[in-house]
Image 1 (tube, rainbow, N blue to C red):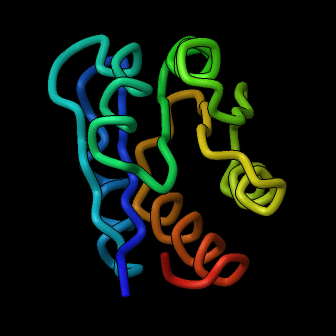
Image 2 (image 1 turned 45 degrees about the vertical axis):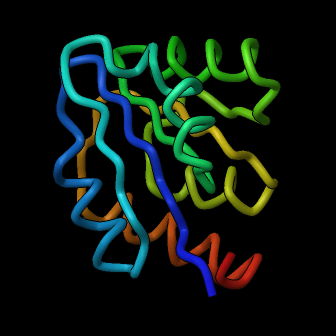
Length: 121
């Protein structure tokens, strides 16, 4: 049985809290280092064979839209709550764009929702 792999790209180089939540739910988190990491989301998702990716920036859109345009990932962006993220997972999105909200709860709920909907990869 595989593992849910979540790539996290944050405009300010953060993402450690959401990564802890991903791992608490049994997933593997890959945090892209450095400023403007959100813009590398699609590239790292492809390289890692990611289950889904999370982009954080002020608008909640730039990295998600870039990943969608470059690789065709189904994206939802401009989100501001855990509930919106869970809905996006349930809608089959693989790129989730949020405003800044590096929260452990977010990572945990997204992985749990993915497993509930799709089973372990």
